[in-house]
Length: 433
Image (spheres, one colour):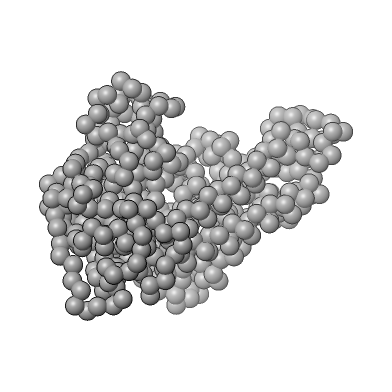
């Protein structure tokens, strides 16, 4: 497979694309968004090789008509062109169509007789070409930006179309497995959340038939249950490191690495090179909640972490005391809890909450037996989620190590026997290393 003489020429994106362009925000901005309708793709939706559905906006037919020139089509590539997320890139998911993009996202629509869009996507996220895009974006006067002209002139490796298809198929096989595992994780998470709501919101827990409801600060609750301040049932930010007791190396989680119920990346660093905010110590079962812009609901459960895992001081680290961490996690990650934090945030440009806001939050505390029963059911799901998450990290790591070798031609796949019609994918991962 390896052929040191195998070389791949480069081509301008503008020469292999039918369309490159970005859109606009409808008049009225966020206030004009609808609860449903035509999808409006924004930069927060676009991640490398992944689309984030959590903050997908919608517009109506009249608003969409004004953006008809940036109608998104199947197999379009989405590229962030401004701000901190510049150069993030993914394929548009079929299920969100019809869709438009705003001014921070560009569409790259390949000429399918010349280029495989899945292959081009992988080129744009590969380390060498990603770095080139980031460097190119720094040419703006005030902020990171990729103009239409810069994108059109950007060059990517350009093997024959059949070879593009093969490279895309090989790499997509890994992404298909990751996507399948991610769907299973989502189902497990939804099962746990439904059980929490059934037992502790609707009070249909085992034995509820004979329970009496009594008044509390949170409304009617089963008799014998309590409403307590979070600070009475959990410690908050209880462990930190200093330069005096710091390890030589750490694994670090920054605020930007966490989204709703997910840790998206962990960085390995020498402590001396770590940011000054890398101070909070976390352990298994801890809950981390971003104190900045709590309305974004950036939180996660720490599950079987490495011993040197450290998180930013921009997180509140909440450790359950004498109650199951699984119950506490679901109790303080509800929409109501997020609204409570958002209502207590201060600062207009950079709204944030502090430790006392967490400590003063009121939390329903059921009977010990009920919480333990809940934990015994949910813990099995958390174990499965952890296993699937680790598999995804391994698959992603393997894909990332193959990607630059494939698109550079270091691994020559031109003579690999892979059946493809241009957009099909192999049924299993092909071992070519």
